[in-house]
Length: 227
View 1 (cartoon, one colour):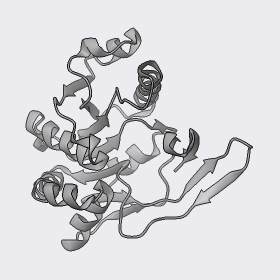
View 2 (cartoon, rainbow, N blue to C red):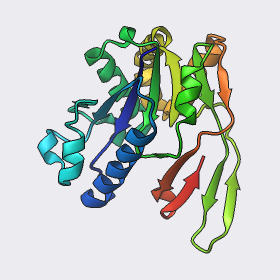
View 3 (cartoon, helix red, strand yellow):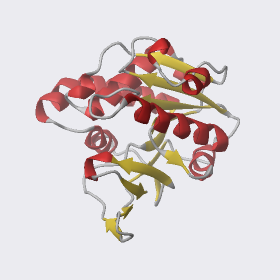
């Protein structure tokens, strides 16, 4: 079975130094390439650069040119008003440039995460239902070497990583297009959008209790979170 992982990216943002941001993406991609199974194609879509030449770190630029990575550049960024809708806009754009029907499953992945092991990809390969979702608590490492668990939030599904059959992902894209303006006006996030799509239609899904992802939470003071 051939799978596709769609990776949402924003390489350059005004609130973080470019080199720091690019370096984080560089190592997230290196780790992804290290653990992802061979039956996955990778497409990365960015909405903050105009051309590949905007990337300043040469190693990152070279990796984005590799034959096993397809880079798409979306020349608009509605994520400045709603980050989640910006990511969905990238998904929509990607579906217009990549034939999703060539794949069994489509994985949605926000790229600025470190994947600790191949387990989540193996879960996709073994998926019997049409959806794989999660809403795990997070463990945060504080600067004073204390640890804090954050519980789950109701009425959303985590969209750092989820998967759908290609047919259902295309339906999710159509749904997201229809909801885009409503979500933008009412400040509805992509995680709530995903939750609503699944539950309004009563779709069955398989559940992930954890993701095994590491992310740096800049909004909380550069804390490291394990999901």
